[in-house]
Image (cartoon, rainbow, N blue to C red; front, side, top):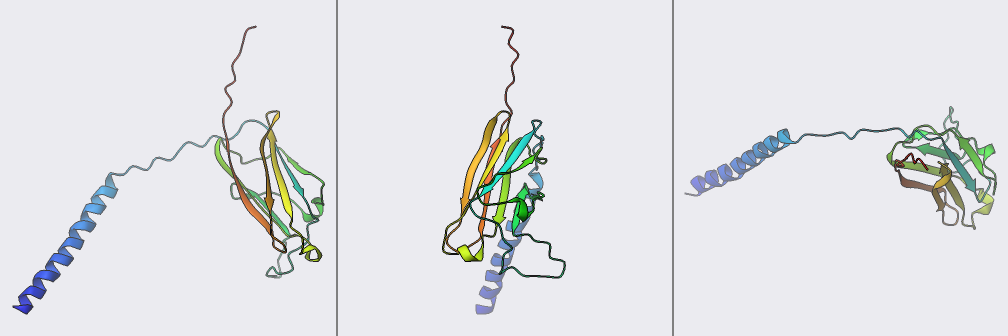
Amino acid sequence: MRFFLTIVIWIIIIGGLFFYSRQREMAEARVQIQRPAITEAKDAYTLQVTPTFSIEKDPFALEIEEDTSSGVQLSLNGAPLPVAAKNLQRGVPWKLEGVDGLVMGNNEIYVQASPPLTESNLEHGVRVQLLGSGAVNVDRTIWSYQGSLVAGTIHFQLKEEAHEDHAH
């Protein structure tokens, strides 16, 4: 009797898993994935970055022979933007005109910068502004704790402006 009960329990468990996985596969086959249409931003945008410190190469970063890191990383929607650490000075806004890669809808800007090791007792920040269409679209500051890298991601949305022609 124990042997028969063991076989019945195994059939119920394995059979239940089989029917569950089969039902799930059939449900997944009915799902239609719709990819949203991505529309690039038509207006000319300017990215302005202002650090509260002078950028230095990260002394704790892993160094390899072909290392070209300059102590700062800046990317828009995952694509790196060209910026050299010597261009970013304390309190001086650095501008990148004609920013490519912005889309209507969700966007993100990633910033990582290394403050000087001698200022590890201070908190530092990087102000990021996105200017376009005669207005400031994004104005956020990323802050660090004492002695750490200034790093963060800024999420924002660009919306299409409704341009209406008025005859007055």
